Length: 299
Picture (cartoon, helix red, strand yellow):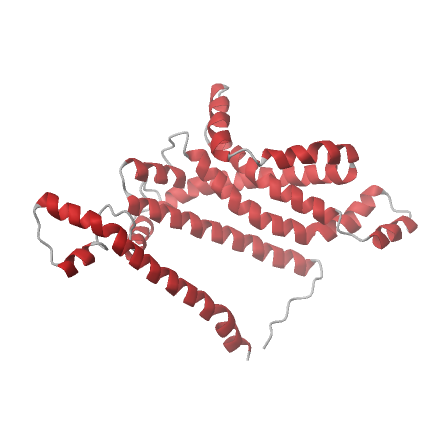
């Protein structure tokens, strides 16, 4: 009963949505690229039949909108078709971006947890720092990234750290907000009970506030790891980096390689999905170790 129910309620809806998106994508590529095919035929003096003209819309070398099979072919060629050490391999570029993502995510998580602890336990930090933390996220990252990288390069800091700091800037915010909510989630009756045990602040934190905040922490980490990847990609754009998914997008835009751009975008999306899945598996493991009951699937 469980497997058919899972297939019917989880797999079929996802596949249906994907099929609709792919169909709409093919139709959009057909109409968006048609004018390019007509202009190319006039320029080269070619005569296409109407059906060949429409079919050619799915086979352009530099289309306005690549067809799904073109993006899949480019992904396969850039991953399985090349050595992972090749400068043209998306695996190589993905690892460069992933290294900055993970470092920035680690720094952002630590910073967010420390700030949340201070905000919860110090009213001064709550009143003064929390509004500034919220206001910091209203500044567009595309404006912050070039300034941060230029300043760091001026003082001799380059390479991995500047990109990681941009990821830190983005990823610490959801951790702060989630941890503040989680550390304040214990009910008043539970806090009063700890006081009757004559527990000090450290014991209240380790035995009550921290365990209660773990679900909020992992929910924030799922957002933080994805946005950290975005920060690493954005950090590669203003530097003219030679490696990384951001550099791949930049070089594709320079030479009008739209298929390369879309393949890099899909590689970034797949990488973000894998990172979120890893955080989700870590959450399941931690919650199981903490004694949480596994969820039961409906038959």
